[in-house]
Length: 397
Image (tube, rainbow, N blue to C red; front, side, top):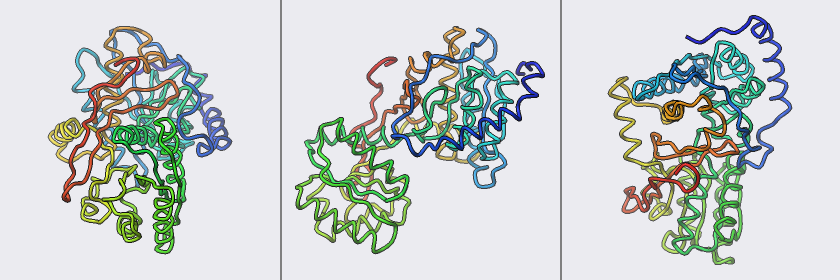
């Protein structure tokens, strides 16, 4: 069990929660560049070598909309604990209710109870608040969020990011000789983040963005953007169209029908999706889908995790469950090295890890880099064009 610290700190929890809520209100995570915040410091709580590692898991157990995700995350964390070799995790679970103020409060409580690192929360606002609440405690937070704007300082994000996916796809496009692209994006927050990630990945990889065309989610809006994108392809002689739209969005089938109807066929232009299209096999038969590219995790590793989880719990894991498994695995690997500074920012960013979807690492700015495969749709089936690499360049690989 966690060590209980002095009563004075416990008495100050309400003040800490109010302070964190104030910080959250004053810090809108959407306003940053979207590719990682300030560099993480090398701080972090020291652990007792050879003893169980006190870890706090923060999940929205009482949030009716997110409770199934919370349960799956906890199950995955415990599965990872059972599979660790040579190290023991002392896990205690705290309910954030899906609320930022509650996340700040239980994060402080977890540290008071002796936690040396926090795994979670799920939502970006809650993760931001939890990180702020324990920043002065020298405790790092491994959030399940993929919102890069909250990353940095003592907060790391484990969720897959647009930037990582865009860079993988853009590097593949460059290798295939692609030079000029048109970006089609939904004119909302996710679409804006996706657009920015694609444009920055294009710059890094020496590819020209001919035009970026946004749309409102409506039949007229999608029809208009299909016409604009087709005109941009024609006038700018673009060889690729990058689409930010989530595959589950109602706009996706309209785009994959209307873009070809406006003269932009898959035989003339390379379609690329920023999100996973394999989650909607019904898209595979649409005119714009044939030959399209998108990125996915290592399929074999993902399936192996799914099978172990299902065998243990009798049900399939939620798609986000693997993030909790990855977090526990990373903590266990670092603790197994037998050093008291295993959970500092310096240690967290100096190693590579093998997760449920392949290898990954945490970066100094709090974001992550994950090895991804490039997939395509051919004859109404998904095929792997370029497998996920078994290592990533840089420190730790």
